[in-house]
Length: 402
Image 1: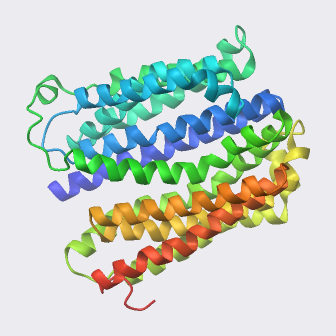
Image 2: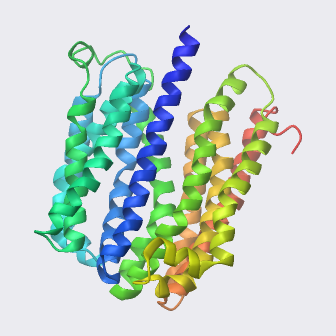
Image 3: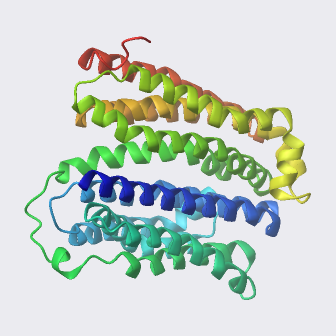
């Protein structure tokens, strides 16, 4: 009975994650029809900053879900307040540097404590089996953002309305997933993950987010506003490749972890996951390579598709390389312990460094930045292989046939 209940809760959580991700992705594409290139580039740069900071709530969500009890409320608020204060102080410098108004960064800084707390509370909901609260918090965050954008457009400039709706959606999701009073007040001394678990989790999440979203921040730094907007649109559309493969990773992780715990072979699982990733994620990447004009016009209409078309095949190929490598690293995470977390994070950091080096060595053009991002993401395939090798020596059943 417990296994059946756990499976149902896992399925509901997965459906909520996929549904909210689809809603969020569709919203980001829809903005391409409402905003001009400079406005879209500014919003995409803000979104990239948002997603990089989201490494903290993701780490708190995973760490809290492993606690015996308690919602991690105090630690989440303190951590969020520290990060938010740092962003607030840096906003006059950071905003103009990445191509967004400083007031956007300052407003986001004020919501960072709530953002981190939301991650911790979602982790508590997952642990306590409150799948409905977990799922509704995701749908509320992204659904409210979509619903609020239209009325806000009447009072605020386009990208400012989208930023405001994004932050309000985050705040409105908090009450939906508020912990039960008895569990929230429980002692926090009984911990299974511990504070030490948050550091490697944050490291991995931040490094992966940087590789997935950091090139858009680089576009804001290196390119004129219109070119940055065109690059952001192409990179955003190409992320459908990653999200397609990410569904494979979500499905594979618990299965691999159970096989490893039982001492069973997992090589066939890795082979199947990589094959599924190549098929599911490879299809949109192939479409972007063969029909970039049709893809761009379908996503953004005629307004900005002309500037996106020359970049789409490169951004799609780079995202496919990232997705395939991420599937392999997901397998390593499921197969190993805390030490593997640091190695996986290091693999992403190395790929980010290659991206940075290439981006600052080439001339500031959108197509050249797309090549730099492709080089960095292709590097992840090499570093992922290096991570898997010691994992296979430690767990000889991981790659018995590959």
